[in-house]
Image (cartoon, rainbow, N blue to C red; front, side):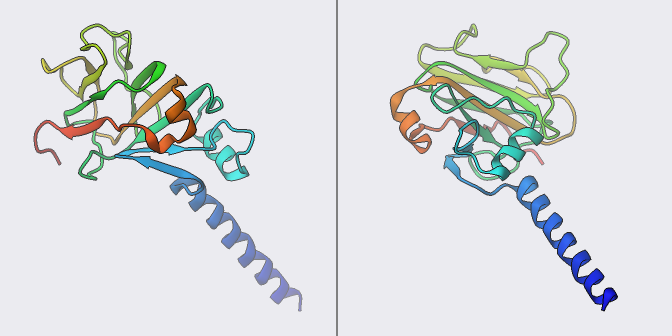
Length: 189
């Protein structure tokens, strides 16, 4: 009797921990897509479920509420291929309707890439951007095609778009964002 209860409890513990790990690692919850960009609509919200709160904590985010900031994360390009630090990508599109926006490059461990010149993001105050447009290039080496975000190494790449004090249309529906395009500059694998 004791042995069967023990194995039942152990099985329940393994299944429970395994399912929690899968949800935290691979997502779930209210995720909205705008092109290659994904947004956890409840991140920073008082309505966030425990799994969303745990994902925010594990990701090291300091998530503000959606009236203050909306976050979008891209781990693939427009064609659905995973982003890689060793490749060059061009990110373009109309500037999002927000008081301030930024695009930051992270390694797939969610840490910033090392850069001796402290170039970690491009924002609406960055020099070299056409008015009302987002235009930047990521990759391990500089590009003449626009402002450059260095991504040295051989890891995966995450791009995070932050909209601070977003406009009313995007605040009402995060899917209403006109997505920034992410395109590989040359074939890369």
